[in-house]
Image (cartoon, rainbow, N blue to C red; front, top):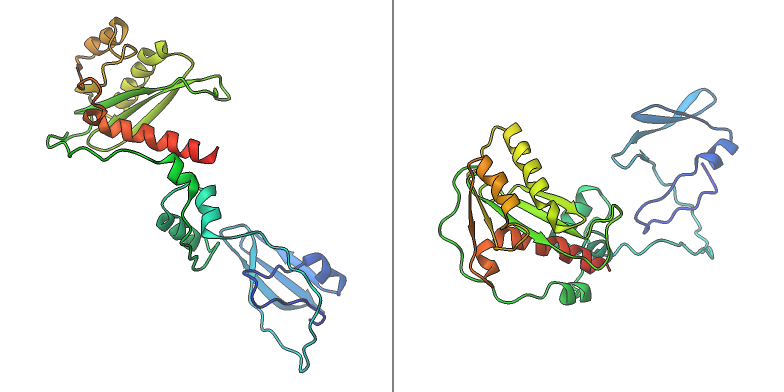
Length: 256
């Protein structure tokens, strides 16, 4: 095929099917591969990639005399910082692994300091680790309520409650329009745990009124679950679920 624009340094060269058909080729495609035919002979084959496109292998024949063309290639910025922002400001090493896995960027290098992370992820020094931990699923469930948020969700929720298993680190989040819905969310969570054949033995909260009240107490007593509170102004004692709340809010804040 002649008279083709080929840019060696671009990350991907796009192949136009419509232009190929104008030159007398026929295009056939199936679920996993495609073919270009001319004079009833297969001239080129391609295989479907994970991104839904067909990848073609071609051999480039360079002309004896190359003439510089006045062409401007418009391509989006594919820097690591841009993808770091698109993926909710995750660790850049993790972002690089994702980009390599899906063949978006081969070897992205970036030493840029992210202003969004500097403003959105500041925190004080951590406390020491807790020595006593749960040893089986359901032995201890950490509970925390977050809100009200300045902007409500599409469903009208301004709060959410997070349940986190201390052993498996499994997390379950429920959105709420008011704090009074904690008991209803707790009942749903306990029923889901029963379906997985795990019994909840104890819950740990920060002592907030939305958790420490007669309605929630009745739900826990009905299932034989004990409840305890962390010390006032010491969120580190309920750090597992507090950290998860921080991760959720940080991701949202950095995208604003």
